[in-house]
Length: 293
Image (cartoon, rainbow, N blue to C red; front, side, top):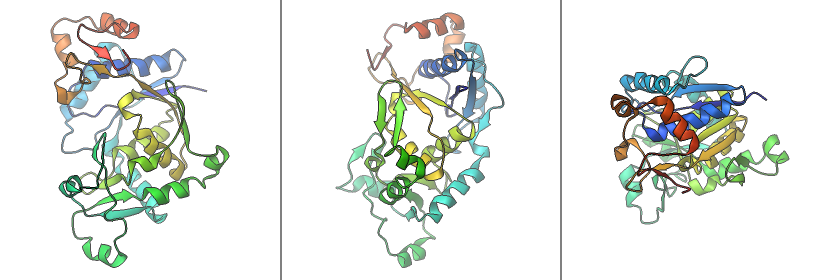
């Protein structure tokens, strides 16, 4: 089977060493097998995405010597496709409008906290239909009724044959999906008419991605993605959730943590071939470590 991998950054800042580490792993996985390496720009967040960063991403990848195959896919150009998927889930009675603000959810004494913040306690799930209809003029998002969704997914022929929702990870092996742990996740908002979870699941299938290479911080999100794959009749790729790069402060390299951009390394005269070779060998700059160190 032809291996297809992808690198899918959000254009909300410049690429840094952590991005390079992930991109190189995805690139090598495909190229070593004679497969295809794709570039996808995940620009659904219209308030934070910048066109200048799209160009910068392509510039940085070229500097690293990582050539991608085919045209660059832009999520911002695929909103009608995500809407169709939402309509399909809505027709299955798996979505409901939620009128809670982020502040209200955070203030809920019963709301536990997960990796993405307070976990939604299900306040609007049981609202009477009449009340929902009367409040649709209010700001709201659309949440997935996780309990109902899991019940529907488990009846899918492919899932029944596999005796449950599973996916395979290169490092963790076979994992049984536990989407209920994520509670009722948001799949669309007024300002962003899709979510990362929905868009990435649909686009990986649309691009024929066979192997998803991404950081270990996204492993938990795969519980949700595996559920959406079952609900929408989409294939399940193989996953490779690699260790994260940590800075001298012990925090993962990230834009919000002020990680050194590749552009700055380039301006300082760094040799891209040497940098990529070092990343492949696991030889990291002084002060940078990985989560499996």
